[in-house]
Figure 1 (tube, rainbow over the protein chains, first blue to last red):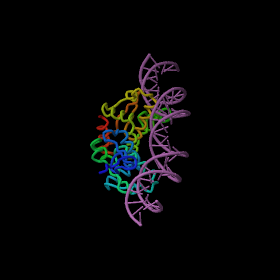
Figure 2 (tube, chains in turn blue, green, purple, brown):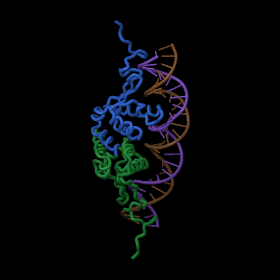
Figure 3 (cartoon, each protein chain N blue to C red):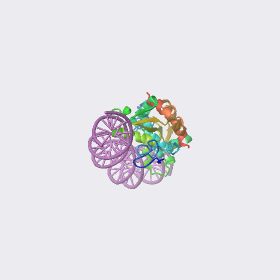
Figure 4 (spheres, helix red, strand yellow):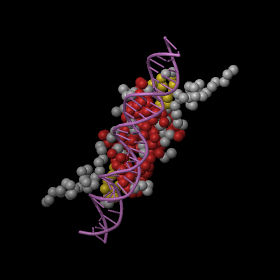
Length: 119
Length: 119
DNA sequence: TCTATATTTCGAATATATACGAACTATGGC
DNA sequence: GCCATAGTTCGTATATATTCGAAATATAGA
């Protein structure tokens, strides 16, 4: 039986080193200042708030009419701040908050932000 | 009896329109994104953390060896985000967190940030 | 009034962030 | 294989932040 080739072109789409997979930092490596910076933008606060309500969503579902490249940028910032995990579901990228992990790292922070963002 | 002159050169040093007095926004006018941005800088996180422990301090006491103009800038950002109140005490400026007000505006936020910054 | 001290303001350099079109890449379905 | 779709990456323009020296301002005290 042939071994599965995991490399540049033949890879496991769910593995962390897949071409399509994203960098999700270990939650312990996320710095507080970076998390706060990620949350300090109205567009990203909106995305985070909607993800908290809906659980999961594609990028397009949360674009608010903005160009794809802008939305992609904001998702990247959220990912790198440990706030969002993105997984490939066919042609769509599904995003969800890393709530348990983030809460473990910064207890109460996300709750306080989400409470504040909704008035 | 002469009325007290409140103007460009003869003014009440405790009044909000004094030359030396600072702009402290009404807490209800502080936007979440601006508060988070103010907290998303390591220098300012350090200042806020020290103020939380010490209660009150002059600018110089918290400068961490940085030039005065830089420290002054960071205090201004904290002031405009509703986090810090500065009052004139003779030649020094005494700074304190607007804790009660800020907590009322964004419940749990400052606690979560302060808990996270210490570790 | 002169001096020392604490801090702000100004100005300019540099760094970082945001925005968005165009080109590119991965996936699923035909 | 070809096409459409969903996102990413790239390049660049612009906006905002940070830094710090120098000059200005306020206050206390001699």
